[in-house]
Amino acid sequence: MSDTEVEERGTLEIAHVVVRKVAERAADNVSGTVRIERKIAGVGAGLRGASVKVSGHGSDIDLLLDVAVQYPAAVRDVVDQVRTAVTEDVQHMTSYRVRGLNVTVSALLGDTPARVS
Image (cartoon, rainbow, N blue to C red; front, side, top):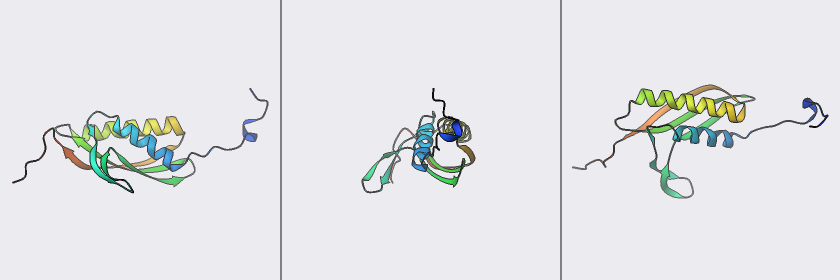
């Protein structure tokens, strides 16, 4: 271990893109969330899981999360699990405090494709 005091070692800044990836992975790992076909900038269409926007400064951040839920899962229960998983993972892995977490459920998808009439 170095004799250098903690204050003299420098600083650590974790980019919002890293926080976004941690939050997306945490949300995608919750049972009841699903990947859906979405347009991916510069790539075209593909399967994507949760989508997160990060804002804030310092050690306090706010997250806007968009997720799809598998039918017939209880939406409120899945969202509660997503909130817990995302908050815990982001705080554990980055030491940032999740000040706000807004979740939008943008799709509710069943096992079978929708019928077109």
